[in-house]
Image (tube, rainbow, N blue to C red):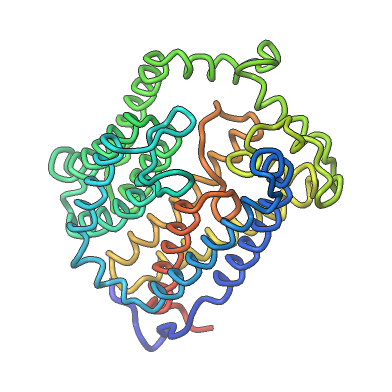
Length: 373
């Protein structure tokens, strides 16, 4: 429905609240990456600043991308959406053929310590293409085969390629984001409910196919039964969160980063935040993410067209789903799966692509039609 210009006005400047939240998150992330990684970096590379120096470089590149895309008219993405999707799928295939294996997952293209993660590019690329596809579907979204299945099949194909790496965390984020976008596009709840039920069965099958995933589920149910193997990481994470108390042990005073908690600068950085900054620090971080999601949803509601609205839903949903999964794993609320905490965890591809997504969101916000106060 068209909005009346007499009661509403178009925004012509950046959403400085989003920019402010991102700046705070990036600064906190850089500080916490250094705090969490200094011991392991000194022990492994002889340089306590090894990880934080790289994180700062990626953050600078990401901020440049964010402000560039904030000025780049997002409507142009629609014209290139099919090309973006094709490039995303080509990269997902290439990584299976010539990718670098790290930590048991063949998920990187590159060499040595340098590399990019195609699944991160695919997440954003799929969001752009799905926004284009769903915005053209209209009433077809009420149909199972003409509206529901095409976008779902596309995402399932991407998930299938990513699961061959394997990377369960990225797969869950992609599917969660896809379902949110399809819900916003008007798909039937019965279709979503049916797929959710089949998804649970499929998830159970994926777990049953890999012994290490079975062990993850078992250790999730009772990690204390496996304190030296599958339950080790979550136990150390809970020790960190528990010892932080209300106010924390103080910045830099984590005990778990002394080679107790594996890779504390990546998937489990929230554990170190909880330990050093306490419950209040962790809650403040969640509130910042809450503000970011609120502004993203607000942008989606008042976007000038359906493509922009669905694009905003996808970017905001991607961030929200990833935060929920990461926090859920760290607190022992869901089975362990590797996924970074947006804007906070160490990781070049993830940080740069998340900031690129925020840049697109800022451009949609600049063109949105907000109510006059």
